[in-house]
Image 1 (tube, rainbow, N blue to C red):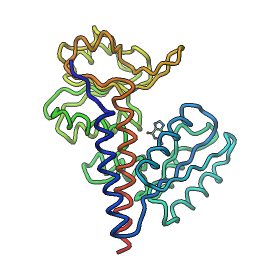
Image 2 (tube, helix red, strand yellow):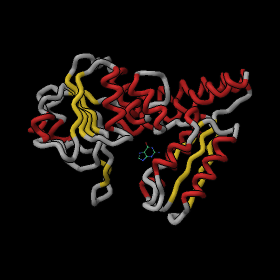
Image 3 (spheres, helix red, strand yellow):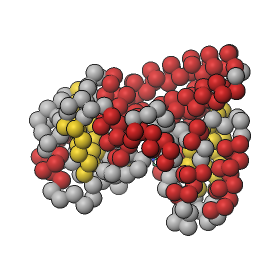
Image 4 (spheres, helix red, strand yellow):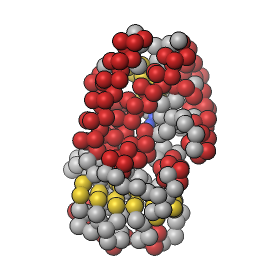
Length: 285
Ligand code: GUN
């Protein structure tokens, strides 16, 4: 078994991004800028936003976080997004999800200017991804594809099983795999007999947020395992959705949690923000 080391690859990618951002600044005077909206007090969301801000600092990007109370109105968030859409110092806009119940999330995501949609959640970018056109791709599945590529794992013709059908992870993961000519199965909460499907996987992708959902008897010998789950155990340890100890004895490759997909997500956010900044710089030339 070999570990798919997302920490090492993300460090390498971040170093490249730092260089590219320096070149962009030398050529155009522009510094990539990311604006984040964080609503409420959810500790996990706050921790993610802090990591994203720290990554921007490491990369030399400008970043600003708008913290809003849990009882914020729809129009207040919408007005903030409109302001960010019109601010030339902001290349990327990220709305940390989930939003509180009173907020219409779809309407919020649709308001983000697609050229600043570094999370790739706007229907315009979702459509471009499913059609196989260039656009912004959600950071977590994009990071997974880069990680597989680093280890020369080609998904073409492989049975790829994705467990989880969220807009953030499962659906864009499936689109990227299909675009790369994999045979793709998507399983979700209503799937009958999950094990029957996961046993088919040459490469198994799991991102649902359930500790130990994938056990050793659900995995084919020599399969490649990509664990996209991030969960905290009662004693505060970070673990994924896969029973790492047992499954790692059976598979050929596996992502650790932490140190697998998580750091790749952050690196891809920087990469998408740099991509947005370059496109905005070109438009201004
Ligand atoms: N909430 C959970 N994952 C994500 C993500 O990748 N981006 C945003 N904006 N919110 C999230």
